[in-house]
Length: 213
Image 1 (spheres, rainbow, N blue to C red):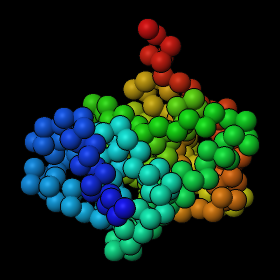
Image 2: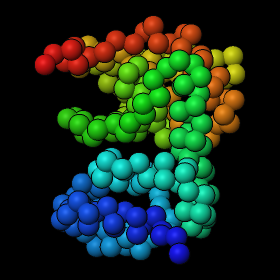
Image 3: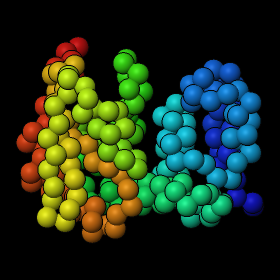
Image 4: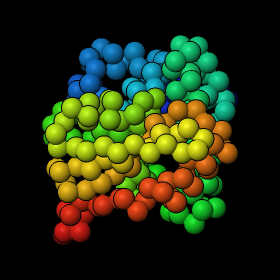
């Protein structure tokens, strides 16, 4: 049987959930006509795929990691997009095992798009630890956090040269951790996570509303 393209998988999910095409286009921040173009694609911009995954509540990056044949269908991407896709596929391939070996919860979820100030959110989160991952860049740069007086950022650097941002937010009286999600080997990701566990998790402070019913 011929393998479906990434666009066909997305179309199936849209149809299954009975999304109105116009509403779906607005949800992923594109024109209605572009949605049909997405359905025909065998490659996908990494940021667009992240938005679609959030809206449809389906992890297409995991599909790419689990299905090498599907990933091959994305081989005509630009170099930047392919590098990003490979990075995310690698992340989902190795991270659950790393977390399990470290005795940490391996629950990884997409950040719900609940921003009320128009700023972009990180892409993924370990919800039990408020550790976030932002695809391709640091969230503090993506959301211009350093110019926002309601945030205070402390950056730690591991011996291997990985940067970890510890971000205090006055909005929710909370502290989260953010790591840039780029391509790393399994050993490098494990080094990052051990650095987080040993040096950074102690700073995490969950928002007060998480404790209120």
